[in-house]
Image (cartoon, rainbow, N blue to C red; front, side, top):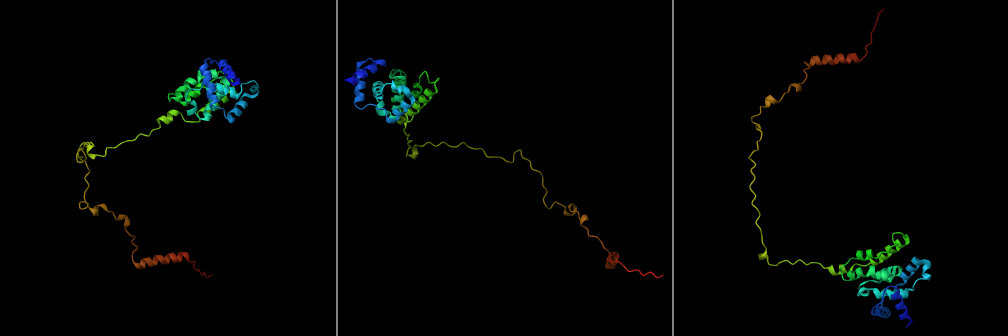
Length: 240
């Protein structure tokens, strides 16, 4: 009874006045709805710091969080994705979570929105002014983006290309006729005389290949003697 009263108070504080919605949230949590993991509890405690002394309990927030989750969220989202959403809801309140994120999250679960769409909806006015909140938002968005979108699982089908096994059903097109090339048109070649027409005697000049004429053997011998005499000193006798 005390839990019910606490849940009603939390719901009213966050703008939920429908008794059926409040009852559904209580029953969902009681029957095994979302429960924050130990890791997200520790992370939120570090983020909140000393304000945890006056904050709501994790259990109370979890009941409120379960009350605004769209249908199918517990079945399609992972624990880490739910932890990211829960941390955001704990920080901004389930009322803001319901108005900002739940509409996009509902489309996401139906395959009509992307992961980035949900992440963009997870914002707060102080995100751009406070570094701590900016880091927290980035971490919460990463947690939600840790798993592929349900739309990917739906569209991940491999197309099958069927081929007609009957070759006669294939249509073959004739290749266009290519006109023959005519190399003789418009091409002139220089006249090259053949080897019979060349005058070899007129084209070869042997004037530079002539050998020196040293004359007779006797003249050559005299020349060598003169060279030898000039290189060998002679003894001169002078009589006084």
